[in-house]
Length: 384
Image (cartoon, rainbow, N blue to C red; front, side, top):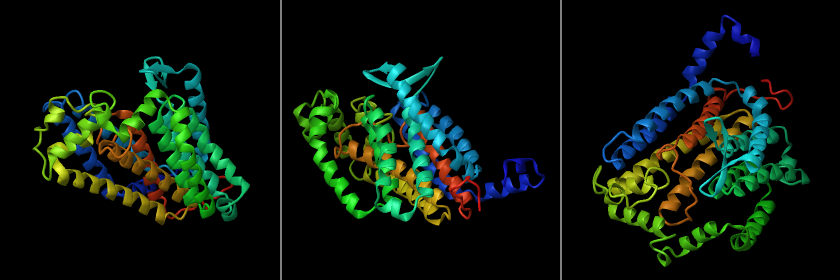
């Protein structure tokens, strides 16, 4: 189908067919997660829709419409836009270095009039699309073991280093994990994987000691021993662990979480909303939400598995890895199993930027599902 076909009489019927192909169970799972987020935001605000819950629900409504619209987009269009989106994201990250806004000691934002945004969010999608397109036309030998691998490695590390310098360690970790996952899933040799893991373990100590900013290094040390500074750098983790433990099996009850209601729990609407959930609904409530996340991840991976297009498989896998990394890092963070790096729980936490990024990514996943029986050529990005 060409762009000119949009004006043909039968195109409306094609769009209806595509719309019916959307995985509505997947949409329902996402709605349940966002709904749980709205309920928790209502609770921790003192049973008030303001300032978070109503805004969260409205944002999700807008984002779900955007996701459904993006699901209609042919894979060949995503394929054609892959490198431009990555290139735009890289240019915006460089612009942040030159003219970005500094807030709370970090230079992460670009402002255009009254509108400001974080270009690193563009790169979360850009790295997925660019690597999926790159590997779509690569031979199995190139993907497995060759000097050609320096290209995807450079494409991954360039944005990672720029984002880490802002500094935004959490987002840099997400981009690195996503890029590495796509490279591995594309068929990377186990020899290189083993060597990369060994090199990573060797680099971590000097990186922590000599490269990290002082506050980032303190976060790592606090993670290892939070009680060394209970009223300072260890406060976040200790309060989160208190909330988790006090919830027990069934929790204290909706709206009865003392840590969140009395504002002992920091960043309760964003980074530590999962701890607030644990306090009010206990282990059972946390397990229910984690099952919803697991179902969403499984269904997105299923989309990657059934796609006939190599580009579609890698793109859907990359988006799923990013989403799973959000859940894993935030969950580990609030349980004291990882340093506090400012990664929210997607769609449960308040915050429009992360929700928009995640839902655009899932729009791509649904596009892969709707067009799962189509293949994309590596030459001009058209279907065969």
